[in-house]
Length: 500
Ligand SMILES: Nc1ncnc2c1ncn2[C@@H]1O[C@H](COP(=O)(O)OP(=O)(O)OP(=O)(O)O)[C@@H](O)[C@H]1O
Ligand SMILES: [Mg+2]
Image (tube, rainbow, N blue to C red; front, side, top):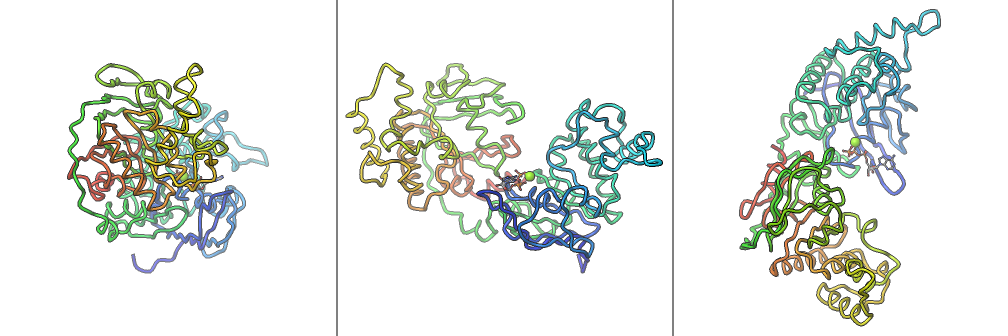
């Protein structure tokens, strides 16, 4: 790219929210006449960075140099006055106002000190014409679909005589034709010397339009790359925190288990509007199935759907050959399905109960009020699992909150295992626990499957998925895009499927 003068240079940007370090010293620069993609998994810090540059949030530390001057915008209006315009992830216009008013909001053309409505209308029509949109500007914004509203927001951003245009996931609600139209426009603007920051989860789009790519991960910067020199596979790898050498070194030979179990669950076209696209899936007894995909691809949503937390609203499903539906967690449990959710603090563990009480909880809930487990039964059960899972505790009467994270996780597993589920769904069961506990949990999983229980395993550690599963379902953008099974499973194969 030669020596270019950067239009925007953000240096060492730090932003902390209560309990989260959203940005930990990020450098980011954009030059005039380039489209710069900002990539990263959900929660990587992309929107936060954008919001700091555009004055929505105040940075805790760092510096922003724009057009040669240090700036510190305190509002979006101030940022606009500097020449930075933005379209946010959430359309943040005013639904009750007309399209014209929305486009000129805060910068209405005035005539003799009064707002000139004719001027507003004319300006709005022109702004929309640039995007080749033929829209009645006197109608309320809310009259139009989200996709059109998004385009109107873009027209508004383009209406400002800006030098930098930031688009945070502008295409998530646009169809193919609208995206093509937008890209045509962006290329034109790039030709005119505008700097453009583009955030998207669609990998295709990144390569269609961007010159450079900056990848963030967990609030830190992974690197800035020229798009033409960053293979897709490498990009996906870097988004999940692995450089190409690491990916290579992680490819171990796996043991292939023979799984010849009977069909347990079969589904066709199950999905949930606005959450998951319809998908087909099949789960066999004794099988370990992995759900892989980037954060936000729909992994947890799939498990939640199968557990009836956010039930499917389409397609059909059968368990053990009989048609059924899983409309609530209660129904899931009745059908022999158990699940541990991603955040054990929120959904699982009850800190002020003992290990024994925590383990017996689900069993007791299923049995109802008429069958109480005697203390003797409870201790027998708890002791059995403490031993089987190697939970490190002096006895079953310890408060669960005093156990280490990994041991809490095992106790939670025990709670569900006590119910002898036929399908056990584990969402991030090994997050935040050390290597030793991880290995033990993996061992327990294997043993259970030998006995015929099916496991659905979700982890953002893709190598964990590739190492442990007999079959992997791969998700992208809330859609199941394929399956890989047996010997074909590898970290690379999963990443490739996501990247293509
Ligand atoms: N206003 C806020 N208050 C508290 N925490 C926040 C706030 N905004 C963002 N965060 C946290 O900061 C981190 C970064 O969030 P951010 O929205 O920047 O991610 P992102 O990369 O844009 O993700 P996505 O792809 O999901 O849009 C996340 O952990 C998020 O929960
Ligand atoms: Mg975001």
